[in-house]
Image (cartoon, rainbow over all chains, first blue to last red; front, side, top):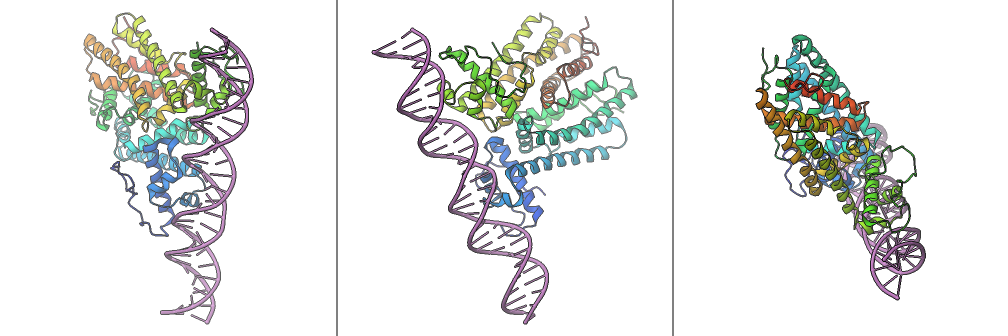
Length: 226
Length: 226
DNA sequence: ATATACTTGTTGGATGCTCATTCAAAATAT
DNA sequence: ATATTTTGAATGAGCATCCAACAAGTATAT
């Protein structure tokens, strides 16, 4: 589906074309191509410096094309954020469902999902932060990001509560759930910032947290204890 | 020092003037006034929509003024970020020094400092995130933000390590320190995003974590155990 | 099949607006 | 009188949007 991934610094290279520059690529494909180009530009140039021309160039198409497929720059950005939010939700929900019924297994799966290659790339993290930086002043962004979080946090809260009942931990479940998902977001932040932190390093830190918070369910390195 | 704090939504109201609109306010005062106006605009309109005119209006001064005191918009933004980074560092270092020699007391003080009124306001958090959103594509911002973190994280790491040695905890200290400061950043993020989370709620979540991670030093509610 | 209208995509330049910067003049200090 | 600070309007660059022309498919007619 996604064509770009390695993201070399190479200049003019366009996205390997779904349908080439050929006219009449299916509507949805061209939209997706433009969305990917937008994520690309956001991650390279930042929100403020991303122009319509940049996006068109990166997609290897002409200047007017965006206004044909999306009505405006704003619409394109919203569609891009929507796409990322949907992709993220689909991803973690799939992991949740595949993890089986045990609360500990589900929690472990959710944490692992956050550091999976498919959603956790420099490119996408940078795009997320570009949006988040603007979110407080744009209700639309805030709504989309908020929706992303709401359900996710509820899922985490439920699991934290379930583990508490299973093992009689003494913590305050809502507070601990909040600190858990804040930590996951913070790790994303540090990954995006560079600093030599790797996806594996971040994942290890998250697992260390699990081991500390739920010692009867997870070993200090985050491996599950039966 | 800082004049604005309550930040009502009120429209044209300028910053209560250090020196009024009177000409010839001391150089440093006018610079500070413009920096405060910049933080204000960033938090209300976001990075992309903050213009020189906005800033001048909010400061209650004329359009050309910024280019006189700072040479360019870029310079003003950098000075603003610099100011926030300095203020933050001064603040937590002061808390650290005032906490006395015990590692647990110092850790508690650092966590409390992060949720103190002076640095943790909606206004300032929003400004931080405006910068962070652009940081990946602007080396200068990244350097300033990175410097902010480096020393802070080292301090936290040292304390986490010290507590481990005091009480023989089983965790991996570097990973746990990373997860701790990620959590603090994530809590800032959620505070900025709104969602009904209060400063006290965020602080409580952080303390809950302390209780979970260092049970021999902190009670479940984060109070110190002697 | 081949020609003819019609729909959908695509292009690149024209248009007009917003904004950072510049600057000459005015105001205030020393 | 001279130096510093402030003003507000002029300048010009960059950008999103618009649009007229063109291209490529698709349906209908011959």
